[in-house]
Image 1 (cartoon, rainbow, N blue to C red):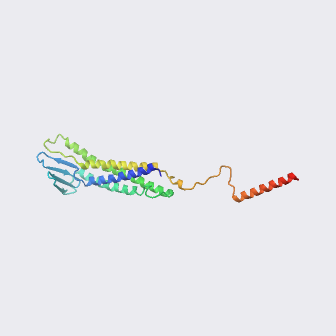
Image 2 (image 1 turned 90 degrees about the vertical axis):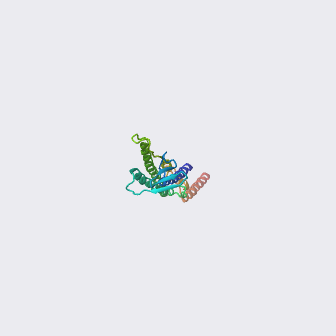
Image 3 (image 1 turned 120 degrees about the vertical axis):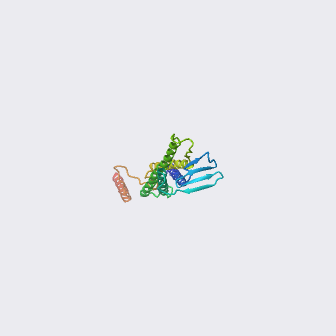
Length: 239
């Protein structure tokens, strides 16, 4: 197995695992959006997918979950659905990509096993790309709405506005890591050929065209007949 292919596989799995952890952290974090006012400088507010929190100046954190699922804003509903789907898809991609690595089991020369591994790794790479796209959509959408609301001229300047939280940057990182992991896994699938293990089998030399291999028994007979012919010729010469 080529070392570059093994390196691509390992990097793809590592990036996929890191992306899944970042996606899970983004889903659970409470600071998707932050808000601070001049009227209450000792307090700041955080908005997440599952609850809202109030952060005191001394570091105290008080969170309150949302009262109703149906009363949520549409952007929070969309972000919940897509982020949960991203976490599930990323986990499935890692579970498919790890058994598909060629370094997990030694190459035994059966092309069926190689094809199965390649299909599993390709499916893991495609799921990683899908998880990256689904993870970038809610994060970018909420960031887009936040920018529009921040620069809305119809709202008085005295009214505080929501700003980006750390969870948005973590979500962007997770999406890009998923895309990189999927690209690496798919690239390793394109580099791998089915005949990687043909070097383990002993090559059988083929006879050139127009020449048939002579069996050992026939070789012995032909040599004995040639010797008898040479002896008869030598006797005939002396007679």
